[in-house]
Length: 195
Image (cartoon, rainbow, N blue to C red; front, side, top):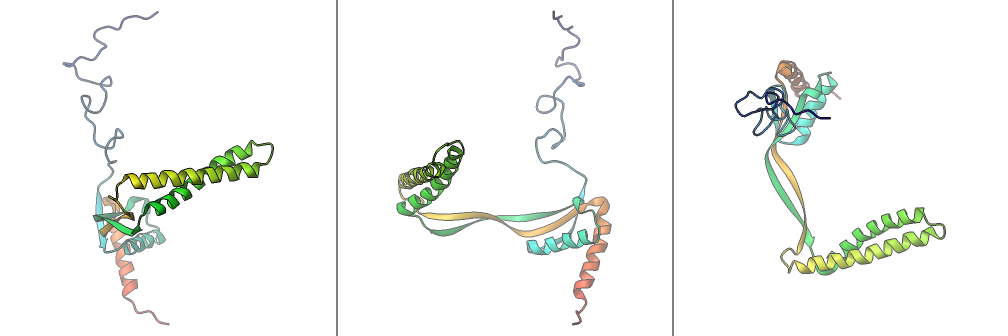
């Protein structure tokens, strides 16, 4: 048996929310990252160095790790991001069919293996049939999909993000320790190597 809740226990617009008011829009305001929305917030950070390429920034973090710095409080941040699309070659309907056949063959092999596990008889034949059917259907779908573009994208490409600069940041309370270790790395790099 249920009892009706008293009017004072329900939330009303003129009441302060307390714990009965949900967080987020229209409810109790929360900082970004505390309710799963937005980037997580953490302690304040300080940039201890900026580098033109990723290997240089990686070398700094590696040096910090080698000297027992708590690197879980460090991060490498890429800035000035650029999207680079590298053109790999010309795409024809025939080539699209070949790519589709390869993709379909892998999928057909996977399905053939699944059915082959439960086959009592010739399981190798089941796998080969799955592979062939997958390749044929993949080739058909690949060729048709490319033909339907009407020649608007007759090339293949690969996209990647590149940063113009890489910053190494650490939590503010560890910045002085990181700078001292970084100064030691620079001293070691400046010393001539005897050999």
